[in-house]
Length: 212
Length: 212
DNA sequence: AGTGATACTTACAATCTTGTAAGTATCACG
DNA sequence: CGTGATACTTACAAGATTGTAAGTATCACT
Image (cartoon, rainbow over all chains, first blue to last red):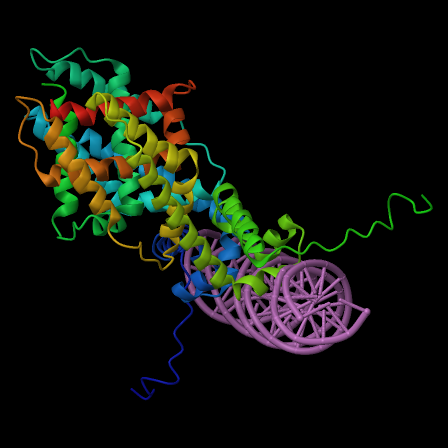
């Protein structure tokens, strides 16, 4: 140890692979986006979060606009991927419990993982983007088939539009909670920690009740 | 007409009352906010929209921060005012129809008048604000009394939390639609003009169904 | 080891944005 | 009309922010 541990420590410039660097930059950007909101996105800030210089970001994304496009793209990709994975892992036991699980899962992916806030910001910003295909439509079809399968003996007839509306309901509610959840709950005096989960379960049962 | 109609036209500097000026500035700000999204708020842009110089805005609001606070304040004031007015005008005929009307009204105020997008942006930005009192809680109480009154003969018991959850559901859904409505509908192939209204009615009936 | 590719840095330029200072025009009121 | 208040303007300062240029350090590969 001839070298003093501090002072002369030359921290050996980190050199990530391009892919890794891009990922880290996107992570930091999304973090700022979902935590600090729309005004939190400044190249220099993101760079400083990562301990790099801001031109490093420009090196990988060309411009601020390019970074934004990349964030948009990845956010949607992840959203779809996570959501579809969650739905495919849907348990197959009691249909009511299963539906409850699916709803909770959707909330977890969108709200708890922070996707919804990012996407909401993008939508509010009018960022140009086109979700791949209508995968949600495909999900609706799968769900619809499932509903018909598990439909109770004297439940009212189930239209496809009804299923689609159910999906919209969950989607909208999820967005709404992600954005206004804390505010709204505080405003109606629902400040205990269990409230979000109770609401999610309540919603799931409200929806499923129509099938039986 | 010795003067040429164009060129020398000195358009007599407009001088509004302070109140009127503030209102116009806030209107323009909210317009940019809801149309162009979070990045649209630049003092110079707003000033140019109004045909004034940007220090005029600073003259009235002190700083950009002051302008933002004023926008927040007014947006919430309007939101509450419009919403409560709508609820108080609630028709008193058939309870189901009445509930449907209330839900549609809430959507109209929040979505169609553009309040939700502004508030959503504020929430995403982490703008500091404290909604007056818990007026939503008061609304919940009124609604709950009404539900108990019109409760069907063999409907399940109605808890207050159930009513609160119903309100949260409508509130969240409204936010969600305001932000992601067009995207989501397009993604599930619901692109006819009547779809938003059908969904709103469907939601209203879903909620009311539990009372009967 | 040597070499080319490239991730990354420092230094700098151009532009934009908020904010200030000081003066001008218009209104209210005597 | 005169006078004070103030809505508003032009000109400018200070700082932030994106982007460029050129060089340096590190990796992969021979």
